[in-house]
Length: 205
Image (cartoon, rainbow, N blue to C red; front, side, top):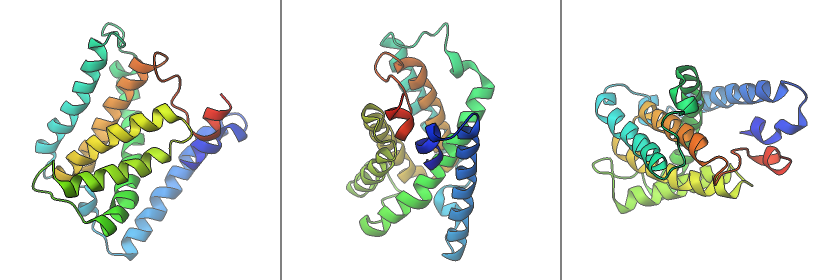
């Protein structure tokens, strides 16, 4: 997120390059750290064996959110924008996978060290709720100082992580993130969320 935070200080098309570069460095550094600590990528949800069970649940969550926005009158079903654009969906899905990988590999894993690893046998439990709320709060703080976006991220990420605590599939988590985030972008801007920028990009808009 460092590239997104400091984007206004960079000239021309440099912000996109900076975000891509920091994303690549972040993933590489995290993978090296995980390898040194002998953490299995499967434990982080990089698995496909349960995608047929977890995928519909996560995507259903995203579609319900999209439907709620449509019923509220803030999303025009006849003009869904990026929701109907396969290229936009694919591009944001990769960005969502990157974000959720770092959330799980860094924030979730370290929170689990102090709060316990949660209960994978069910969605709702005290252990899962504590782990999900704390991890989601840390992720929301990264979106400062955009307060409305922070609140939205905290609520949405808590719901996604409660599902992740049960199903442990990062690909399904990223898909739900992508669908829900694009729905919010189309539905809430500028009705409630004037922009989704963070850091200096938000302060200097």
